[in-house]
Image (cartoon, rainbow, N blue to C red):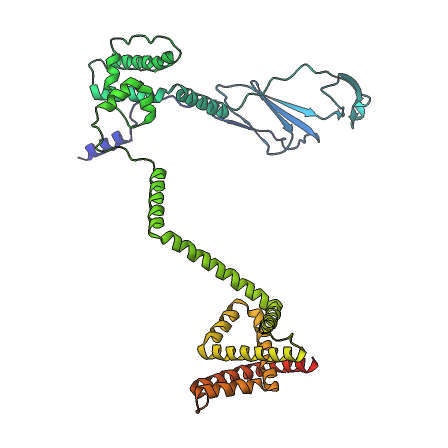
Length: 436
């Protein structure tokens, strides 16, 4: 058993022979080669020298530097390497112009006394346009692929082959190659027939294999129908479908026009159209009248107009032209009427709503309105018209005085006066009144 175990271990360590013979060992020259050129111990390279290494047709050159590596690739066999040591002798600078032919004689500047006085002749001449550089391989590959895709798309090769393969899979003929060739030929003949018919030429008769195109499955694409069906064939195919149960509806625009005409006729016959138009006209007139009254009250023309109306009424009643005292009396009467209307509006709540609307719409004019109201109340209190209006209101309400409504009006008036006094508007109005 020990002998068998030792034999198995030796067999496991033994290498398995290659079926095609022993594998060749790689040659050291087959790999990338690196060369390092350094000066030996006890020797030094001249300052500023250059090292040139040539292996075959490849030469690499550079200034001498310790530990510098020269790499060589694509070395397929053993070769000799030639190493050259160059020393810088001198240098010069000359200007060249490819558009101008010229010759220059320049002196070489050298730091070595043994090479002083060197001169060179430099001829510059253009030899024609240089050959355009070839694009990189990657760009050429991309351009070739793009050109191939454009060619396939232009001639619709992929689409035709796809249709042919679908036809083969559907019919599964005994000779698929012959079926594919016939299908492609028939498709080309059918595509050429409409073009010849459009140009006036007589379309050739289809070959014996033209019937194979009829078995191609129909796909729901308009381009496919235009390519594979002529006008007569498409009409025949549509006739196979049953007729519509009802005619096609007219356009939506005609339907809407009909409904509008019918609705207008019904509204005109029942009088609704006239009512709507009158309501719209009346609302428009009311809006315009309110705008005119607001402008007249703002610029003061409404008051002058009322005074002229009172004067005209006095003349129409047979009275003479009012004199200045009569005008003042009419003005006091007008003021009393206005105060009476203000009290009535305050009791009804109309004044509060109007002030709320004015406060929301025109907050900048609220201060001016308060000043004017305070001024009117102060004037009414001075000339006694406020007391007469309140007394008249109390007499009309009964012996009990103004009652609850009069008390509410007094409270509202007192509240307005208190607000005007707290905000300083009442003092300003009184000062303005005393100044005037």
